[in-house]
Image 1 (cartoon, rainbow, N blue to C red):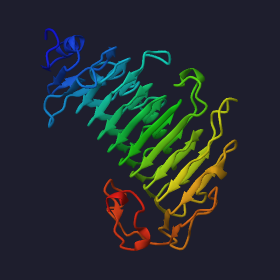
Image 2 (cartoon, one colour; image 1 turned 180 degrees about the horizontal axis):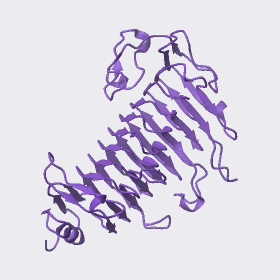
Image 3 (cartoon, one colour; image 1 turned 135 degrees about the vertical axis):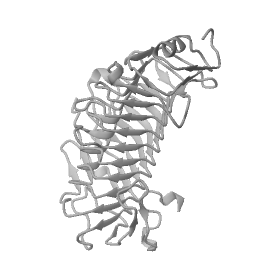
Length: 374
C-alpha cells in the first residue's frame, strides 16, 4: 500500500505490518481469512473522529484468527492511539493479554475514541493477572458485542478509563482459568456504563466496581476513589461467588439486572485501597434488580471494614429463593424500600443470555434485565 489509501486488504503477516505502518486517518485495513501471529505493537496510530482507522475482518462470516501458536504474547497492543477501531477479529491463547490498549503511561498524551467491536477473545492466561481485554487511560471508548471466554485476571480490565461503554458483550468462564472477575473498573475509572451483557460463571466477582490499584497507575493521578459514577444496567448474571462488588467506589448504580443463583453472596461492599487520601466506599444504589438465589447464599451483603454501608440505597428489588419461596434477604446494609419477596418470576430460558421474566404478576413490572423494553 502506498500513501494513505482508503481501503486495503491484507492476507499475510508481512502485508498487515506494512499496512499498519502506512495507515492514516480514514484507512480501513481488511484482514483476509486465515491464521496470523500476534505481537502487533501500535504506537501513536491515530485517525480522527470523522475518519477513524479501522482494522477488521475482510469476510465477516470467516474472521481471521490471531493465535499465540504463531507467536507473540498479545495479539495487539495499542499505545497512545486514538480513533482506532478493531472489528470482527478472533484472538486465542495469548499468555499476557488478548488485546491491550493504553495511553502510553500515566503521564502519556492520552488515548480517545478507541472502539472494540464484535471481537472474540478466548483462552488468555490461563492464570494470574492476564486479561482478555486490558484498557488503561482511555477516554470516550466503546466495547460492543464482544465474546470473551477463559481468562486469568479480568475479562475486561479498566484502569483510569473515562466516559466509556461496555455493551452487548458475553463473558464466559471456562474450567482451568483463574478468572478473578468479568469486568473490573479501577484506578480512577469514572462515567462508564456496563449494559446488556451476559456474565456466565465469570469467576469470583462478576463486576468489580473499583479495586486496588498502585498509586502510580491512577488516572487522574490525584483521584481519591478507585471508581466513580459507574452504571451497571440490563445485564444477566449466572453464578460467581459475588456478582456485584463495590470496592472503594463512589456512586456506583446497579439498576435493572437479573442475577441467577450466585454462589455465596449477592453483593459485597469493600475497601481494599486504604491509603490515607482515599474516601470510603459509599453511595452505591441497588435498585429494580431480580435475584434468584438458593440456600447457598447465607450472607446477602458482605460488608468489609472502612466502608460507609449506611450511605447505600436498596430499593424495589425482587428476591426469590428457588428452594424456599418464603425466604427473603437478610443483613442488607440498610432497610430496603418496596422490596418484592417470594414472587416466582417463572423465568423463560433460565441461566442463559435470553432469560426473561415469564410471570405476569404486576409486582414484577419494571424489575430485572429487559424491563426497560417491556
